[in-house]
Every structure is written in C-alpha cells, then in structure tokens.
Length: 477
Length: 109
Image (cartoon, rainbow over all chains, first blue to last red; front, side):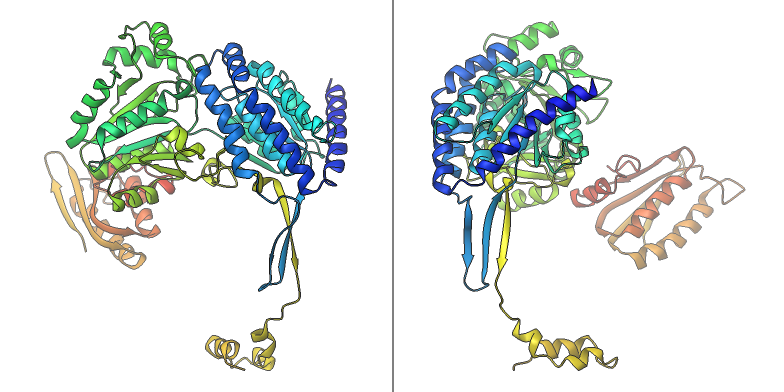
C-alpha cells in the first residue's frame, strides 16, 4: 500500500519536475503570455465555477463566490501582471547588487472547501507567474469544482505554450497520499491553506512550507466610530458568502457607553440578538465542544438553515445572529471561530476592558491572522494595532474583503493570508508571487573603504576599547 | 514601596503597586511582601501557605519586568488554594502576561 502511494507520488513528481525543467527556460514574455491566458480563461469561467462550488459543497452563496473568483483571477492578475519574475529583476548601481529571480520548482498546493475555485485559480496564477509547476490537492468535498478550475487553467496554459503537466491535481481522498506527496523530496514548497492540522502537517513534512491557518477575528467599535456605517460594513463582510472567509468578523466588542446604540443599529439593519436559551441551542449545533472548534455542518450556511438546525425561529431576512457573551474560552463556545453568519457580541465597561477582551479573543485560536477596528481616533487605532497580534489590522473596513486585499485597501489581493509566527507561519504578509521565487543576489565588488582604511593593528591591541575602534572606523581618511 | 489593604472579614490582602516594576524594585519588594505575608497570616507556621487571598493591583503600573512576573507567580504559589488575581491591568500589561502564557493562571483582570 505504502509502496503504491509512493509510486503514485513519484509519478506525479516526475511529471512536475520535467515541467519545472522546461519552465525555467521560459523568458518573461513567454511566462506572461501563459499567465494572461490562464487569467482570461478563469475569469470567463467565474460564474460556472461559482455555481459548481456551491452545488458541490453546499457552502456559501454563488453570487459571492463569483466575486471571490474575480478576486482570485482579475485582481490577482492586475496585481502581478507587471511583476518581473524572470531573469534580472533589479539592479542597484549604488550597491552593485543585481537580483535574479529563479523558480522554486514543483509546488504542492492544498485548497480549502470554503474557497475551492478562487483559491485554486489564485494559486495557479501566482505559481505560473513564478514559473513553478503546481500540484493541487483539493478538499475531498470540493474535488469536482476545484478539478474543473484546474482543468480550465491548465488547458489555457497549454494553449499559450506552457509546459505539459505544469498544473496537476491529485484527489485528496487519502490523507496518507497527501502526506506522501507533501513529504516527497522533489516538492520545492508546500502552499497550504486550511485548518491547523493541515498547516502542522505541511510544516512537519520536511519540505519548505507556507501554511496559513485559522483566525478568530475580533472587531472593536470605538466610541469615535460612525456606528451605522460600522454596522453596515460588518454585515456586508460577515454575510459575504455566508461568512466563509477566514478573515470574517467573529466578535464585536464595544464599550458600555455605546453598546445600546450599537445593539439598536444591528437590530435596525435586520440582525437578531439571540436569547440565552437560543444561544445554548445555536452553540449545540455550531461548535464541537470537545475540540472547541466549529462544526463543519454549519460552515457557510445561511441564517435560515442555522436557525432551522438549531430549532429556533427568526424573522425572514435576518442577516446575522448575534450572541451576547460574558466571557471568552471553553465556557463560551460561540467565542471561537465560526465561518457562518453568527457573531459573538461583548460589552465592556470601559475602553481598556474592551481592548483586553480583544486580546483574549485574538489569542483564542486566531493569533497572527486579522483584526478590525472602527474608529476615527488615530491614537486608538495605533494603540489597538500594537496590542493585537494580527498580520492585518483593517480600519473602518469589512474584514473579509479588507484582509484579502485589492478592493478596500492596497494590500496585495490574496487568498492565502500569512499569520506570522503566532499562527506558526513564516510571514504575516498576504501570499503572492514574490513568495514563490528564489532571489539570487549578484554582488559586485564594492570595497568598504572605511573597513579597509583602518589601522588593523589597533584591533590586535588589548588597550584599544570600543570607543577607540569606533573612532578608527569612522575617521575621515 | 507599595501600599496595601487588608480586609479581615473577607481575608483578602490587596497590594497596590506603582510606576515601573523593574528588576531592582521587584527584588526589593519581594522581601517586603514576604514580611507582610508573615505578619498577616494566622497560621503559626509563618512559612506555610497563606490563609488569605492575594490581589495585586497594577492600575498605577507602567512597566513590569520578568522579576515582577516571577513575584506574581511566587504570590500565586504562596496562597492556599491559589486564590490570587491581578486587577486593573492596562492592555499593555495584560498583553505582557498573555505573551508569557500566564494570564489565565494568574487570573489577570
């Protein structure tokens, strides 16, 4: 069995390595031609793929998945199309250093069930732009739609002259096989987007990995905020694709002095505060208590479906279910990340208590991911940002769209968000093409005159201290 | 070096710290705290676990050193049933305990 898995992995990697070998001969023009063709084909398939994704996974809203596909194709393409990724990408005559981009080789990419087509297309685009073949492992519940996205991209790439097998897909049915491929010596890099277990497996494989995991996004509404605007923005974000974006709001934190106004505004904008009894019912279906993790059965479901599963009644057109909680952690299951239109709501007695709650929520499974603040007080924005451990702190912006970038701010559009060492990641950046190239530095001889002009005997003299040596190094010659 | 308030009915000792709790100050405070513990305990064995609760109030504290954190851990261990808390922390102090992984153990409020 194990041998069979290894044979299959060897076959896939042999194909990928041949594609990598051919790809490294491509110049920038050939590369860009491939990327442009893939972008065009994927953008043209945005609606078909969105519908397929919802039909197959039962998660999210097809119209929002169209937007996700637009972000993963058009916005990503517009962001990377002019990037130099082949040959000499920079030269600084002052330092005499040239930078040369080299491809990494075969990239093993894992895609999630929540964004199965957009993440696949985005990863294909950034891999091909860097001249790396890609092997996609789709989520087992999204294999058809991810496969179709990969097929469309691959055919367009081939048509534009890309190497054979530059895009391959494996079935994620077998965890053992995924791990066998991950650990294969010919994999240059793993690009893993998913849960904690997947990210850990990627980093444990022995191959370099960019693995980005879960979030638990706290959003603080300051007294200086425009409250109706803030609530409208939060709703726009949390309802987007039924809350499946890992950067979507998870908790709203307000000070007591504005709590009533915020509550009223949520209600006015068709959100529903759950009663304590209803909270218990929603907890029971939304969170697996033993592991304190969200139930997969409510991911990306509508308010109506969640209400039905929980056995509660909500008015037609309710946008979000809010649960007022008194604390954070295992006694308050709805304080964990839930990728569905359910929000935890906290009232703190003052500003400091509110920020401390945000810190607790931030550390409850979402360190390094994203956070949000609505405020018009720059001092508070900066203080919040320094206190929260998040790769992205989005200000007066829906966090789903804001963290992904490309629409509400100038962050690079990306469907894989680095969470820094807090999230066991190597970077806090939005992952894009620059993370998928090796940069060689050609360092021409540029003598350090200061170093070569010093009286070297002084460094051998025990009587010379740091001040003497500093003077020696900086003196005018 | 710090103010304190002892509530004999509820048997709670609250210690009020101020300013920068750096290593030098924290080391000095350790001795002072110990003599206060011994003075207030009704236990004959003055080195035994304390028979009252302990609260460290850090409202006026602007900086804590690792020595001060050790002082808090020692306080927690010194109290019978571990009835210890840190109150009135500002968010930066809270974050320091969070990063040290001690905010829950020390009941940082």
